[in-house]
Length: 173
Picture: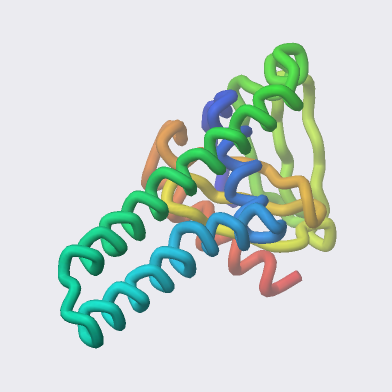
């Protein structure tokens, strides 16, 4: 069966927390609201004003405000979220988690080799898989996952075969 080796960094912990929050909490709803809904509402109002009163200047102002709202407010929300995460993860906790990892698939499940030891994870302990642009997340509980950063995997081709074998094994078990 497949084995992959990768490095986990502190930034990967932050990105997992943000990914998980976007998918499951009010943070994701708030971010969507401020990136899409409020700017879209301002754009609709701008179109209505321009079509009914022919005040193009006010319409352009509202469109500009919609773009600024989408970028600045969502950026501010993300900055506050990152600050909250940075405050909640101590340097000692991060130091105990970051480092070189290896995951091997076997008949019983996953064998994760960490800087602090080994852990055997049974197939029925895996809740779900999620794939983002830069990470693969193997959820062990609804809130905890094995974080695999794609860019730090030592052999990129092995990640593809690992993922295919992992999906096959999860479907089988």
